[in-house]
Length: 627
Image (cartoon, rainbow, N blue to C red; front, top):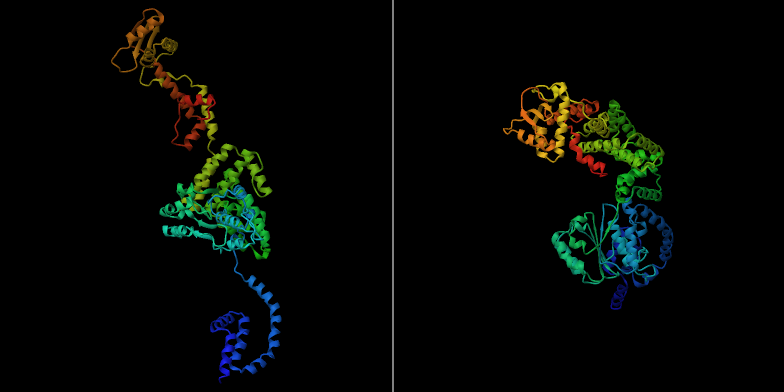
């Protein structure tokens, strides 16, 4: 017994502890066979004597050694099966840029960063701003990689082309690097959160070259949090870099903007997006029509993430019977967009004035799932493309040859005025459809208004016609139209009226402006002869203008005139004649068919006297663009 007592502790010293045995048992429960083989012989050794212990396990040892080779080849398909069973990653995450060369559409920013790194002129704080999905957070992570990359050999420095293989690059890509701290400002908005950053920046980086703080949606920080960060942001330690990302840069305080180097990330052009989506489809082994990619790129509105999300949905929506190909028809159906050919037919019926066919086309598109607002937006986009093609004179922007030819025909047939009028009417209709309780009814009424507006005269032609009528001059007014309620002058007195107008003009030219105005406004001539004027007053003023008129005529002719009031048939004053002529001209203008149509279309319109527009006409004659 005494000999066996020391033997037991000696055997136990080589055996695993209770904690190791428990860990081994847990590992065996999760499918790890290796820990089970270790404790099994140890447990058996505790109950067996030392001599038999060594004999018993010797024989099964080769039997135990034989299974591992059999299990080794079985591990390879198991690992591949595990890889196949990994949860699906959406395209927006799977194809997140890992290098600056994969970051599309932001070449100016990449060039600036490359030069700053090469010249060792790195700012201590960067601000990335732009719309959603253009690469703000991805750019921040790429900058973190570029600053902390050490290269494959471990001796590299900051570079615009991080290797992606060194420990900092892989850890940053996985979001696990201890010195690259990402914070969502939407959920960490207070001073306490910023205080943690202020306390931590004092300590050097653990393993990286720089300690980097990436704060996403930084505009969500409170005012006090911004104020608390200002001092640290202005003079951070040399080993600290701040990377901010935001979609609403206007909400940031000016004090923060002045302490950062700002990069405005651009919207990605639709052509570049379509090319990028085509490359993604090729990597995924998915066939996609060029039209489908253009539709997705247009719906993305310059956002790569939005476009990849739509593409992901389109791949899932594709018909498996057709080989999973992403077609334009399927994408339009998925997004609720109108077919391009259906849009053109709708515009043709609109321009042709065929109301029943127009309503039938609207109902057909609505039955196919096209939303009324999307239908109006599609027509507006079509009018815009036609206008751009007409102005530029180049080929229309369209993915197919058929659509380009159709848009070019529209550009040739429609005038610039018609296209602008279509745009204004559709823009107003779009707002009505957006706010209407019944969008379908609203889009029908809006497009019917556009259809009937084609019957209205062109404003430019109408203005030109009115100007021609005005330049032709009014016909002489009849006496009974000139002054209602006053005795009509005889026709043979007309030469005297013309002579009187000549006399008044001579008085005016002589510099006696006040008297000439009195003679023009207040005198109705009864008799006009050399050195004699008999008249009636055209107003109810108490004063008699005869002395002033007599003096003015004396100064003009050098002779004394007999100027007196009398009774009899008197001609209207020169002012009354002018008003009568103006009214007659306006009446003739109103009776013109084009003007009548304009007043019917615009009941509240007013007819302006061309003389009242003398100043704008003079400006136009002088070459001014104002009207």
